[in-house]
Length: 323
Image (cartoon, rainbow, N blue to C red):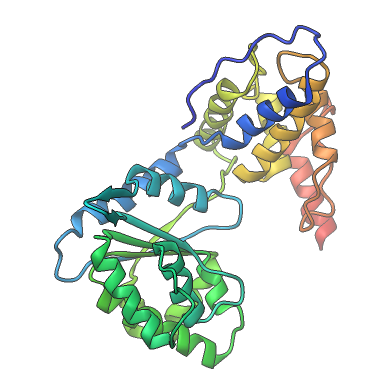
């Protein structure tokens, strides 16, 4: 979670472009460890630490829709165990890599070598690169390998692609000797249907979900998330984001996906700071929502500025128009 940074009063003052940028960047950097986020990161740490010296380290699969914060969580976990230089050798407790779009096993091995600092990361055959990769992992005393954006390894859904990818991942996890966490969109789980051994190796499945807002408990969790965000905003005054009426609108606008909540708050912050105000007002959120396009929700309305907004009715209307 971001530490609260003190920002001065604007009090109607015309801010510089640099101040606007600084406050917007501050919003981008806010990370709120809501209960679902905490649960996942604690499980990852448990598997990481309990696998030390294990004869068969665990394989973990983390899935979640886009925007729920998977990459943010994994990078935060990596930062808990930073790289260190000891006696001229780089020690990398958590090796984090992101799979490039349209990847093959060879390009994944190459990308991991690059992240390890190999100057000739793109040289050699797939087998040569994988062998070199395993040596580097041992030399750098890697304790856990994290492979993000895993869906890019199986972008093309052909039997050949699934077979190559699953064979390489299985072989790599068998040989590496440390826990491997692969992370991707929910559809990435299709790979396990193509290799029973890989399915067993990654039988530990974690899921980072968006917020729900149906039950009283779910509403409390989402409003607590908004309240924590509110305390981290770059203003001297509170914006009351967790107000029941406003929280319903923020839930509708974002569908409970943290990325969209943050994006709305970024744009709203820019508008409020330009106006020299010391908190967000609903009109800032209204204007922010107008700047954001969500292609898969063509029938969504702008909920802000509507005094009679009804969350249940608007969700029903949107679903009906989709049909």
